[in-house]
Length: 152
Image (cartoon, rainbow, N blue to C red; front, top):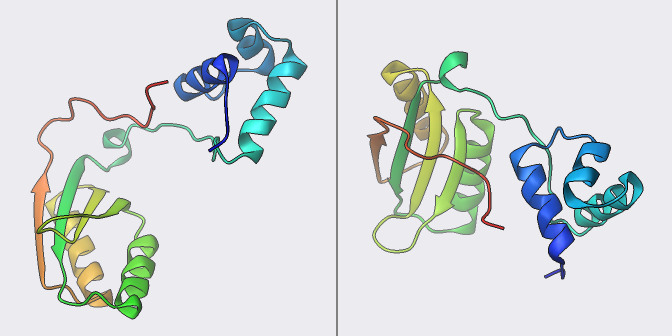
């Protein structure tokens, strides 16, 4: 783990809120010059702490109004199966998150689709690529909080 100081935390917190800030604006907000701010950001990127910068989009306005959590169980736990599963989920752009779980559930998938027909199409494409023992789904009725921000 890379050691970061208070100024790094401030930079990261501001970038999590708005990664489009100019170096001048960011520097002013954290009390650093433009160049000092750039050097710290570059160091944080080189250390792998900043892994990318993205725009946050309104999924519903772009036709992806339904969030689904798919709970999966498999009877196979081989390296070959896992490689196929990993490749399959990475190839399906509707899938936003894939998590190997403890307990009764093997995997949890978070996906965004247009509607139930979109979910069914995603389900059909997934099961055609990799064998699964059980798939169930839960659909989000209301998003109360959805963030990628870490509590710095």
